[in-house]
Image (cartoon, rainbow, N blue to C red; front, side, top):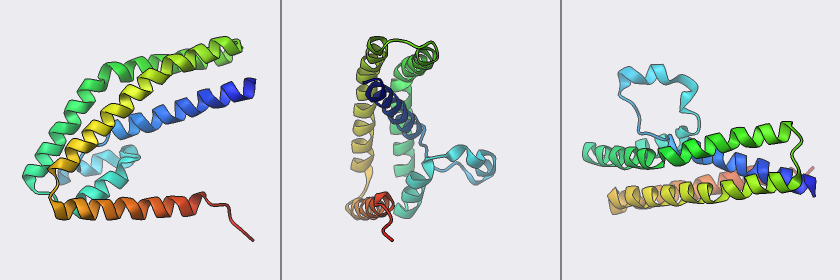
Amino acid sequence: MKRTILAAILGTALSAGAIFAQQATTLPAPAEQQHHQGQRAGNRGGMLRMFRALNLSDTQKQQIRGIMQQTREANADTREQLKALRTEERDAIKSGASEAQLQSLANNAAPLIAKMHASRLVAKSKIYAVLTPEQRQKADEMRSQFGQRFQKRQKPQQN
């Protein structure tokens, strides 16, 4: 039972990390700023590659930046709440909290994670609406290819 709860908490923490990473996604910086970003781009690489491959117009780039900025700002409080909750979870684990306490912390995180996920879906929908039909088709193809590569990596190696 303890393993199940701990696994659920760790899974929730990893999910939140992915949400935070995706919320931080931005369009490529101007060339003079790109060298300063270094490894901070993290998980943004896939989305940035997609944006580059779609050959967005300046107007589309501006619209997408606005959507992403609006989403970041709208989610700032939720991100801070999740950050505080993660600290509380780590402290609870270190202090040997009971299963009930850990479950309560996990239950507190669930609606925040759902809210972030819903916000990301809305932002993706708005971004998709900005694309031309050709760009949408290319984006769909790229997502499909990514999914296939991801599934290949997830399959166990057979000897």
